[in-house]
Length: 117
Image (cartoon, rainbow, N blue to C red; front, side, top):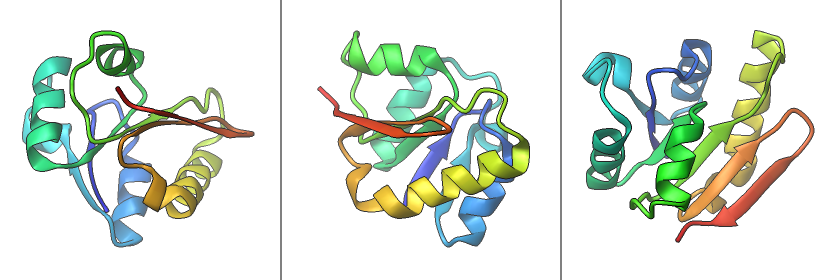
C-alpha cells in the first residue's frame, strides 16, 4: 500500500512500514514545514493514504471536507516506541484493505474506523 506520512509521524514506524513492503512518502523528505492543506492536496493527487499524529488533518478532512483517500491517525499517547511501531504495523497489516475511504484511529487497545465524507 502507498502512504504519505506527515512530518510529525515517527521515523521508526515509517522504516518498519517500508520494510514490510509499503511505499511511504514522508513530508520530511519532500517539503518540511508544509501546511496541512497542501499535504492533503498532495496525498489526493498521489492517491495515497495519509499517516499522521496531527489532529488538524483529521479536522480538515471530517469537518472542512477536504478530500482524502484515507487517513490513519495515531493516538498512542505514551506507548513505548517499540510497542508503538509494532502496534501500528499490526493494524496496517490487519486493516490494509479497509484503509481507503476511511478515517482509521489507532489506539493502544482498539482501532476505530469511520467513513470519510
